[in-house]
Length: 500
Image (cartoon, rainbow, N blue to C red; front, side, top):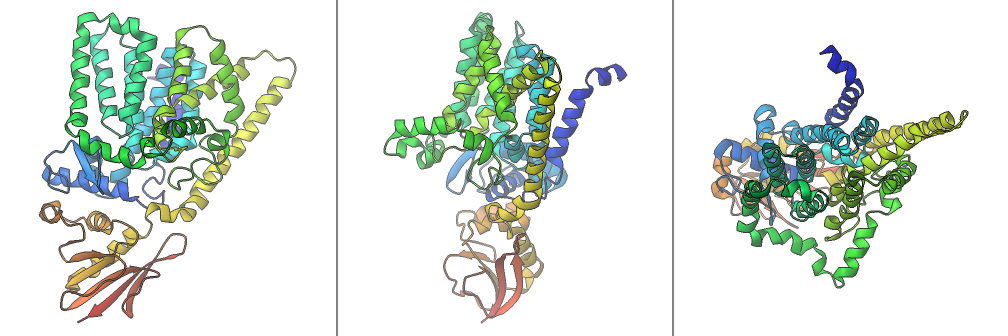
């Protein structure tokens, strides 16, 4: 045990950092659960309790969510943590934080196998451990993060599968899970497998007739997509480039935008849930390292560096097939390749033979810039981001539902404005409403039990006292019982009472 710790002390430190950054306050930051997290969590809770999703579908292969149909794997992955932690932030976000942490470990083994360089492998895992891009999506529940984990796991298992059918099958299973984790994986995983085959076809074909086993496994994992092909196209029809006037031009522009230095190092994604304002998806100090890393990989004549470069080139294909671009979420296909390239650049600097104190000076300057970048990022993330982007995270819904839940028994009806979108799922989630009772009512999302959800205005339909929940600007009964404020201090909801 002591020998293991001694040999792997740096990797252990990196993993501790990775875990700490992904689990620290992960139930509190971002400010609230986003609507997709709430939907995924309640469906996992419903399957845990009844074996059926919110609509009563038994062990579904896809989950219907607000008119879209998503792969069900992400909901199933939440079931164990919800069983342990309950239907709350920790239960919903634990799997993503865990798999995000493990992706850092997998990156180490991936690079060590490809480049056979422990220093580059350690740098790669460290850069990913502190990556703003990866941290952003490891700290809340999103199925794209699951795609990254299973995709990288599949590559690692494949690289170790030489003449080992069991590892090849395990790799195939991992790719199959990745394929069924996220809508974008339906493009990314076939592209990634094609690149792997182009570079490692000799190793693949060496299995000969035994390839029938992984082929059958992949075919089985394609069944959920085939069986639900029509519904799986809904998302693509709403955001895909085929709906634009110039699809090819849109694709090329979108493809190139993911390599734009502004996106990577300064501005990041414009969508509030995807990046911290004032930061890029990567740190500025990584820019010179990436340039050096690219030069390092280009100059190598072996297969592994060329495979990594090919990965870097094809990673922008999936996000470029949809709009808007650049898109950090769909661009998770770049994880962990940017960290690996930057690590190669760091290795170049530390291995360079520079006389005098020039090398120490260069390393000191780089370390100083890195320290400033990292401190700035975490200051923005924990101090300013939660307040500035609170509306992007559906902030206020939890407090509103909990306030209503305490007094709901004294009212014949409860009317909640749908102005902020999908109030029914927040009411189900934070109220921990029994799925057995909800499933028979699920056809109409405008009401269930004594709850009803209205648009611009509400007209009383039942006798007795009623609670009316409205946003700050909407007309409401004169008797205001409670006001719900966002973390940024803005008035979010008025909870009022009326009687007839």
